[in-house]
Amino acid sequence: MKQFVFACLLILAMVIVCPASTVSSRDYTCPICSTEFSADCQLSQTIITSYTQLDGKPFGAAIVPDLLPLCPNCHFPQLQQDLDIELIAQLREYVESEEYQLLAEDNTSYFLLAKIAEHLGSSLQQIGQLYQQACWQVDGGSIHYQDNPVKFREYADLAINYFDQEAVDWLAYYGTVCADLERKSGRMLEAYIRLRELKELPLTEERLQVIDFELQLIEAGDSNPHFLSEARGDTLPWSQPDSTAVEQP
Image (cartoon, rainbow, N blue to C red):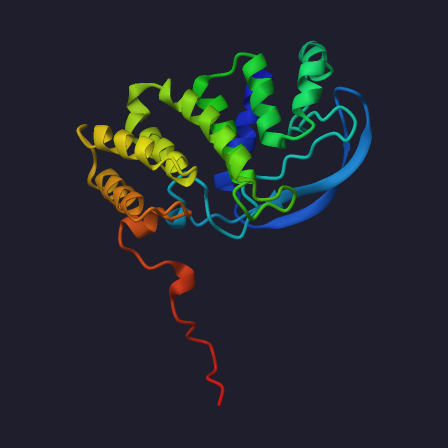
């Protein structure tokens, strides 16, 4: 199980540490059913951490979350690391089950990876992060999945459930992430109550800025994505005038 946890963490880390953006086709051999297939993979990516969305989704020249191909036969997410024989046998039993195959019919690759992580008893934080990334797959901008508000709310509920159980050391961060997921799901009252409770805690100035900005969005009935930089009052990169543009007559 440790090997699988490390592989999941590698996927999570790739969202923030890769220095450039390149997508290429790659050949895979599924470790569960031995099916051979080709799929796109993101070799590298550039992330602008200053413009992370309020729900934690990074912004940059990248596909976020990172591409996670599914085997076309058994629908197992193709990880970035080889798995040992014992773990493959354990995974095969679950992946080939009727329960998993039904889930695979209409859910994303990160949702399925989260289910596998649940099955193997991974940490609450890791499972929550995988459901969080499943949200990002259906909130627009994915090359493989359509914008799906129903799925977004379903995945957000699962992420929130795990984040709510997370250690208090991360309460302020995950609290605002959960509030943003609730706001984007249209559950303004739940987000408002969560934020008012968070505001009673000893918080950093930056976290207070985020909470106040979220409360403003809720008051306006705004369920659209927004960025941490907006909470700080910074200018978004695409709103700045293009100094190289040539004025046309």
